[in-house]
Length: 91
Image 1 (cartoon, rainbow, N blue to C red):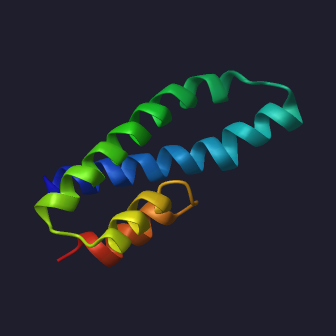
Image 2 (cartoon, rainbow, N blue to C red):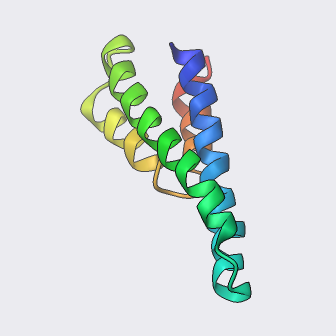
């Protein structure tokens, strides 16, 4: 399950960065919101799957509450999921 979470974490991180640093500037500076529409739904689904898997891994890996909250908060910080992968998931 940890390897699946690592893949989800990577994809969620990439989708968040694309949405934040490419789609949103295009929307506001070029007036074209098609990239936000195209990336928004996949990112939302990946975010929800990330949260569900993080909660499931809490029990499997016996994470403390602090670690669990760190993993969950990292999903809303740019590059946060990559930090989590390096700090808590690679072994």
